Length: 460
Image (cartoon, rainbow, N blue to C red; front, side, top):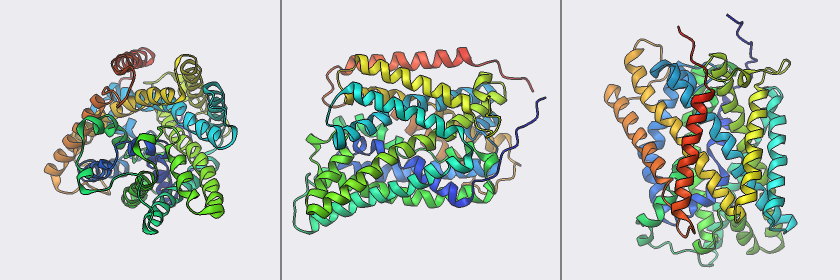
């Protein structure tokens, strides 16, 4: 048996808190979620109560009881077996390689809008490719250095969300009309339009388990994981609402861009405050660009460690588990992730009709693969309660067995429903049925490739 690598325990409680905020507060999809309109607030409240809270509590229990390197790989493997753990890890890892192009296309489109004004899909694609390989380089250095990207990113993102909400409220309180109708009737969900973007809202709540991907690099996971989840969950729920509020106060729904909607809202609100507002908005815009990079770096640091842990267990291709000889980081997983992202960016730039179409198609594939991985996490939580009842659990989801059953079933139902809703064409889509078929084919191909590259798990 090969010797286990020795990791530096460099993640403190404050790091885990900032890491969770940086992971879940995904600024790149804020405009997409706000595209639901005023009904976003109704759906957000429902999602908080029925999904976000029980999901956070389940993750706190598993993260404290099984804190080793790999996170959800360990949980699903312990609960359902190595093959299921490998499959969950595959979708969890590959979604990030798919997601990178969509986020960096937002960065590129916003950068182009702020500084270049080319509106060229190819210019934006090359910017995104350059950022992809910068991310690979960051992921290669040791975690005690790279952790500062998500740490700073969390602070920057919270500042932007608060600024959006604060500027929007200040505008309304000064007597200026809101860009959208906030009457009570508008809070009632309009199913035809809301459902297409509902998966994005659920997507915006996921990521509590990511810090557990570096379980062997935490100083005190049994104490810090539950605490970080509970505090970050409260912060995220409030800050997201303020960000969406700012966008909907500033930008009419008919003008809201999936790519540049957040920047558009900042620019519109800044214009109301003259030269000082322009300066503040420029600084916030630069912060937005940094936050996009922080999003990707945060998730890449986590999912590539899941891939490396799966490779060490023999259920992923060995190359993904190759660690940097000096920094002990999964550098080959980062390199392969960069290659996949680059191919997607080049392919979509060649065939897509617009940058927005590039973003939406890639995001739907990424989001669907991401949600599929959770279809194994929540049943694994319930199975672990029965298969390992005597396992020491520093934190335990309340309400005993009924609470465990209820949380697992409800969260699984939410995930499964939103997986199906990703196939719902977006309002105004030119080729909705064709796009749904493409999404289905891409997902099946992803599954087949995953099963093909996975070695047979080692027998106990």
